Length: 447
Ligand SMILES: NC(=O)c1ccc[n+]([C@@H]2O[C@H](COP(=O)([O-])OP(=O)(O)OC[C@H]3O[C@@H](n4cnc5c(N)ncnc54)[C@H](O)[C@@H]3O)[C@@H](O)[C@H]2O)c1
Image 1 (tube, rainbow, N blue to C red):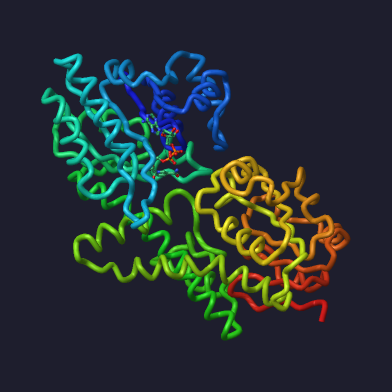
Image 2 (image 1 turned 90 degrees about the horizontal axis):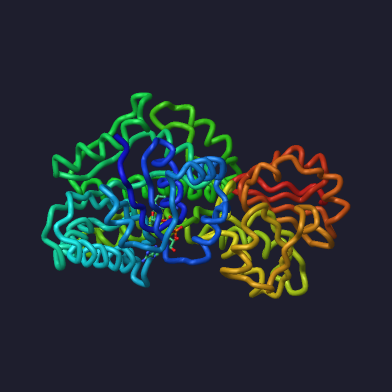
């Protein structure tokens, strides 16, 4: 039997999850309080860039299984399961801001009380929330309504850029609940997503909440570990790519998340690492490894900028830099906590001009941060015109095999800084470039 589902918060997680629940035959109502988003979604457009999402959204919307509204009351009353996919941004002290989650919990409590009694409902935290949040959400709803409901935790592990694939075929589903009926409903709901045999792991609410932070902090740790080693390789004249291949082939270590670069960003790793540290500090416990993960990452974009600064002998005033890539990673338009933003800040502070290109993230960059303080190129090569160097920040596929001859003609001088190690050092030397990457020896072909 299909379920009636409400998804509250129709952003990256809510829209993808809601669409995928509809794809499996459920009736889904997505709620948002942003009229611009709703207008787009009700008129055939999706407000984010996520590969593979549009056809799924279009089909399920047309077939009447996927609806978009600002009417929380109608959505809650019509649903058996209510997913909270609301933002949990970092606060000044690093803790996750629960105001959006608790506000909606309060609204749900009032709605249920107004229409009591209601049939049993499962309220599910899909947002990444601090340990103990399901108890807080329960108490907030309970303040208005003492009817039949439970609050479960169901952390989301999707990756932007692969969100549809990850949602339709997750490696695992984690469900945190001790309520038997909720276990049954959520297992039923997720079974079609794990037909290949991937597990649905059921645990208590607190363990599910910490599992999400543990997963993101572990992945961030691998990146910071490699960046830390890359910095040592630079000092000692080794090549981090060789080291990566040397260790990644060990099946105990594995190949993924071992790439050195100019730091991790995005809406998850930075804020989740900070929130875990805050939770731990509040519990009078030091998470020493996670502290180091954050320290190393904070340095990486600055170190990248320092390479540019040193190359030009500390004089960037009046220089122009072509910047390829603004999104925090390829295949997304998300620029939250993007290393590119930190690098641009430093370049502008030093008096340089930035000509940027990104296939999807220029609108967000303009709207959310830089406005007209940088220029946005219509095509990747346009950004190079009269620039003093090219800075590669996000490894979109289209930047992987550039026409070096054309680049040489367009730049004032053949100089490339590669923040993701995507170019071959020998090829750069052969093509006559000065080339600087992360944790690999510099190439100085211009002498
Ligand atoms: N983006 C990811 O890759 C990802 C992956 C896993 C987990 N998460 C977690 O999921 C949560 C949501 O993240 P996101 O990236 O989807 O955020 P988002 O900002 O893209 O989406 C949140 C949506 O909630 C809406 N909203 C805010 N207040 C509302 C209200 N009162 N009523 C209705 N809608 C409201 C916003 O308008 C927005 O559309 C966060 O806790 C995040 O950490 C994100």
